[in-house]
Amino acid sequence: MQASLFLSLSSSPAISISYPVNRPFPTGIHPPGLRFRSLRREALGFFAPKPAGSCGFSQFVSPRNVFNNTVAAVRDNGSTAKGFDYDLVIIGAGVGGHGAAMHAVENGLKTAIIEGDVIGGTCVNRGCVPSKALLAVSGRIHELQSEDHLKSMGLQVSNHSYDRQSVADHANNLASKIRSNLTNSLKALGVDILTGVGTIVGTQKVKYGKIGFSDKEVTARNILIATGSVPFVPSGIEVDGKTVFTSDQALKLEWVPEWIAIIGSGYIGLEFSDVYTALGSEVTFVEALDQLIPGFDPEIGKLAQRILINSRKIDFHTGVFAKKITPARDGKPVQIELIDAKTKEPKDTLEVDAALIATGRAPFTKGLGLENININTQRGFIPVDERMQVIDTEGNPVPHLYCIGDANGKMMLAHAASAQGISVIENICGKDTVLNHLSIPAACFTHPEISMVGLTEPLAREKAEKEGFEVRVTKTSFKSNTKALAENEAEGLAKLIYRPDNGEILGVHIIGLHAADLIHEASNAIAMGTRIQDIKFAVHAHPTLSEVLDELFKSAKVSEGVINYEPVAV
Image 1 (cartoon, helix red, strand yellow):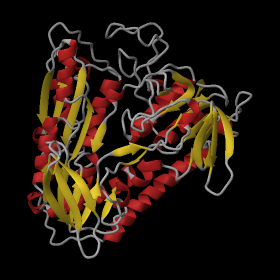
Image 2 (cartoon, helix red, strand yellow; image 1 turned 90 degrees about the vertical axis):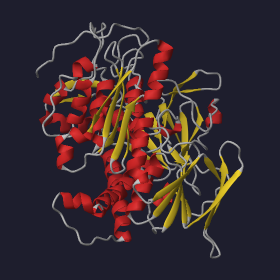
Image 3 (cartoon, helix red, strand yellow; image 1 turned 180 degrees about the vertical axis):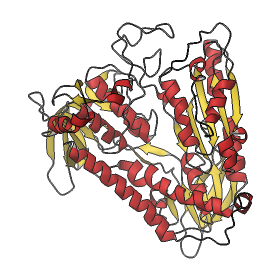
Image 4 (tube, helix red, strand yellow; image 1 turned 30 degrees about the vertical axis):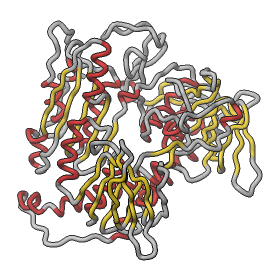
């Protein structure tokens, strides 16, 4: 789990805390009492957790003694205040719930986590983790299929093939390993794992249990909902799990269809197109919007379409809905009836071997007992404030009740859920924190990869028009990067959107080799409030791909008169 957290005040990102949240202060000036979350002391040693039942860190200790101190603090998983079984009960043991539980124990809270399925949630078992195993395979196959690419480097590969079951096993084994690691880490810290479906039955009270067994009830000073999401399947689509399926079934890779339609061209659809084309399938995208790859910066999306779609065995239909999808049966292929997204007039009928439904995800919030505590969901999402505290039907925060991750819909990414969970624990412990979601990066693990953080160019210009400031854009190409050229992987672009009047980074978007790794320099800069006039002094090893961002920041032009801070040598 990450040791640091993207936090923010409403007026300055990535910092917290003993300072009034809504009180603005001049850029570059440290307000009274502001505590920056630095790694300087942590680099020299560790902070031992406080005794259970009290939040925060008590003393600075050397790495040699940290293990013994940690074990002593969590041996009995703490002792709570009178009247409660736990300081914290978490419903849902996905990445978000796991991160919150780890941070809670580190802060001395007696913690339990309720899980009705398996530890790891969607990400580990049916999402991020197994999909990356399949994408690791597809990346190598795409490289082997590119004869010109290999020949230019003096390599000759006469033949290549793959074994479907072995590829599927690779994904399944990785998920099992990570699931085991998460489970063991919770047990090692003394987190009580309560098996069953969790339901809130009253203020600070939760019941859990399995079908066929009597329910058990526990009380908690604080309750955290982290139940995640499930694949969203539009009406009219019949899923049989064999020829018409969601990403949950696709990750099992039970077969490789000759021709597959992918309904939706967002993150999920784009990644699976990378996998299926590598394994030999022909792909047809069905997209309701007028352009493919929605949600990405338009310029990056156009380049991604040229590299990832137009150059492969992929065709597409845009501006259409899949009104009805019928699985293959009685010797007939999968039938897909398309209608115009605007007029709803019939457009076409596709006959394919399989259809993958990649139309997004829906919150998994049914059965939580929210009606027992006066909470209404909004399209299934649980409403929360900026501190992840649940909001009731009258618009008031519900004391001691929080919700993170896909269930609240703020940002449906596993690492966002984890960051939200950690911020909740900080707030429970009295350290007022607000997570800056604009500092959280996202990535699409195609070949090449796509990554982004902050605002797209259209959103940045919309914000600038409303608030009255100028926006500038600068770009760098991977074709001028030595490492990318050495790898013969120079197809790519990095784009910076910023304010020239003060050097604020509004957004960074990358498509290219290892874009998912490169984005973190930009996301950390946004999180820490670092301005262009500061980060341009950063030194990057040569030759590395990181120099793509080095050139990007150096090419930005900040207005004259903006304070330039002297670089600090460490």
